[in-house]
Length: 45
Image (cartoon, rainbow, N blue to C red; front, side, top):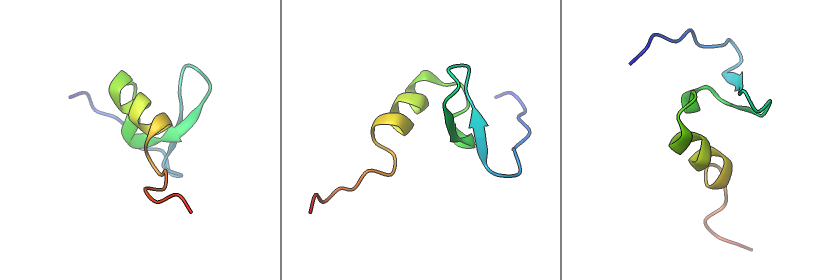
């Protein structure tokens, strides 16, 4: 695992210019999870 300096606000801007949480890094699977599942409600009201 490479060393990464965490941003003070916890957000990173990816090469696609989308701002995401720091934990995604540049891993394609984490990016997909963040964009498609993270933070979505499990219950639809």
